Structure formats: C-alpha cells, structure tokens
Image 1: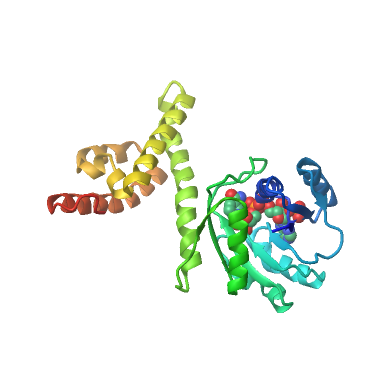
Image 2: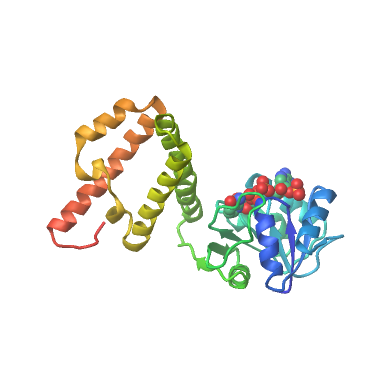
Length: 274
Ligand SMILES: NC(=O)c1ccc[n+]([C@@H]2O[C@H](COP(=O)([O-])OP(=O)(O)OC[C@H]3O[C@@H](n4cnc5c(N)ncnc54)[C@H](OP(=O)(O)O)[C@@H]3O)[C@@H](O)[C@H]2O)c1
C-alpha cells in the first residue's frame, strides 16, 4: 500500500492519517472544507488532494449516513483508485456501489476502537472487521489491516453478520459508557469525592474486563444477582431513579440466566462453561 487518499477530517481520519504516514504510506486528504484539509495536512505532514485520484487506496472516513453520497461524488469526480474502503462497522461494501459501477474494487475495514476527535493515532493490535465485494477487495482491506499491524476479524456468511457485529460493538461501548453515566448520577451526590468514585467505578469495570477477557463474561459475573441475594437487589431498586431502575431490571434477567448456567455447569463438573 503505497499511497492513499483519506476523505474527511473527523475523529477517525485524525487517528488514521498519522498511523498510515508512520508506516510510510503517502497520504493525501480531501475535505468539504479547504481550511480543515489544510489544517490536518499541516498537523500530519501530508498533502491536500488536488483533482481526481489515480490508483492507490481511497479511504472514506465520513459518517455512515454520508457514505453513499460521498461514493457517488467520488465516482462523478473521476476517481479511479485500485480499491475504495469505508470504515463503517454497519454497512457492507454495497454502500459504495457507485464506485463499484465505475470499476473500482470496494470493501470496508472497521477499526473496533473508540476514537474521539483529537485523539492519538490508531494503535497496533487493534481488531478490524474487514471484507470486500470481491476477493481482491477483501485482500486489499486485509492489507490495510496488516499495514496498521492490526488483527483481522473475518465475518461469517450470514446475511446480517455485519449489522450483528456492529450492534454488539455499540452495545458494549456505548452501553458501558451509558452505564457509567447512570452509576455516577446515582452515587455521585452520595459521596464526598465524585472524582474518586469515577476512578473506583472505572477500576471496577477494568477488573471485570480483565476477568472476562481471560475466562469469558459468565465467569466474570459478580454481584448480588449472581449470588442470588434478592433482598440486596430489591434494596438497590429502592434507591434508584426510574431510568436507572429500568436499566437494572432489564439486566437482571441475563445476569440471573448467566448465574444459573454457571451454577449448573459447576454442579455437573464442566469448568469454564458459560
Ligand atoms: N469515531 C469512532 O470511534 C469510530 C470508530 C470506528 C469506526 N468509525 C467509523 O468511521 C467513519 C467516520 O467516523 P468519524 O467518527 O470520524 O466521524 P466524524 O468525526 O463525524 O467525521 C467524519 C468527517 O466526514 C466529513 N463529513 C461529514 N459529513 C459529511 C458529508 N455529509 N459529506 C461528506 N463528508 C462529510 C467531515 O469532514 P470534512 O468536514 O472535513 O469534510 C467529518 O469531519 C464512520 O463510518 C464511523 O462509523 C468511527
């Protein structure tokens, strides 16, 4: 992968461009705003694309809702890259159909990470869900992952594989952030140092994650629902506001199911079963 054009100057572009240039890829930028393109180019030692793209890799780092329109504009602009990849976790290659119609190999490479605007470059060993409309496009997506020293996650053949994968990612990342917010709103007014509470809750989450990474979510489950302490669960619900109680109740069912399956596995001598 020798040269690439990154479209968009948002959060992912800001993380992707320096990661690519650090590995010797010549990157040019395209934006709706010449000022934003010039600013990111100056910050990353890259250039602003003038005119149509010839060869190389086109990377569409634009919001999911803009992908079809940007692909259409790119095809109309006469871009003729070897491959065009988008970075959405939800869409498959079909959203780039206008480019495919123009003879471009189309695919996707979704970095399974959380990238705020102004954050650091994309890290190595990140999981990437990648694929393409054709084997050649899928290989090109894989090459991008290799260049960035990531770990490819191929999807199965199911018709809803990509949507299910992305829903899982959103559930975990957005859901955890929302849980943390609810937890702070619940206990923040009751402690003397809200910042210490935040650190403590994040440490708690991190320790659960370390356990879940090692042994799976069921084995990592702790707390009163897992222990069957129903009086404690009822006591929690009493002090929660409506929204927190609603979320807590909806999570009780999977927690109890996991705990029951774990207990059954332990009693039948199947260690580690979920
Ligand atoms: N952020 C994450 O954590 C994350 C993680 C994994 C994957 N992704 C995926 O990466 C892609 C980009 O996400 P992002 O977080 O970088 O989004 P973003 O911060 O909103 O930035 C996207 C950029 O696209 C350009 N853009 C916005 N609307 C546009 C439009 N209607 N037409 C053309 N260009 C438009 C803008 O750049 P200009 O104004 O310079 O044109 C904007 O800064 C999405 O597919 C997203 O799903 C994001």
